[in-house]
Length: 313
Image (tube, rainbow, N blue to C red; front, side, top):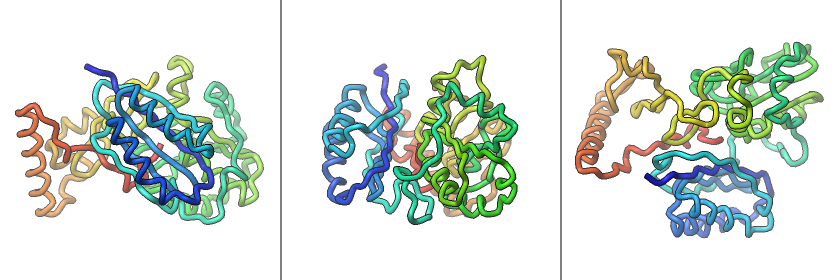
């Protein structure tokens, strides 16, 4: 089987013509048979795409022909099956939605901490460590001792931070997320609020899992990713989670052994919460999936699409 490359990237940069960029970006991905999602906004670009390595590199080379994206960096991982089944290029007000105007990570942002130095920061008793991802992501893995804001979407984080009066009594605040983009805005927000010693994990959890040996790791569990892999572990190897197609929640082998789990219809996280109409729709979708599988065909309707819920690295 061919090995598929997933490339995740983002860059905060002024793209005043981002609307005009949509069609050529989509056409380039189509020409290279690359799938995934690219978000474009005036503040920059955010994407995760996958395909055969030469095709993904072709798209990245195309993006870097724009002088504003010439230094666009990306993170790589490989899988035996396609992580995405569709290609989408979307126009947004923000490439990662926080809902706070005036934040510019190119002007004010936290101090980057390399993955190799992150453990030392975690061990500092004067540091408050905050996981800025959403609750369903934190549930399957996080750093030991990190605070979970229990947010359902990234745009809830500013209000949560306003309520944390204890932060003012700690001299240092460290933040981390999947690939680094959310920390760009969350640390910029804290800096704008007057916090001086603000840090974030450079390259996010994915860089940490890739570069820090498991024997030395302070990471516990798996890291949720926004594609068909669902989760990865140390060395970016596939994790133990799958996806509930009814509620889009990551589910463990223990969840799938539950009496509340029914393939394509429900899991312990959503059992009993869907309407009869939804249940009928899920049942028909699962039937179509099984028919396509029997014919050795790909059922596109089964593809993973969580981008409406902050699906960003």
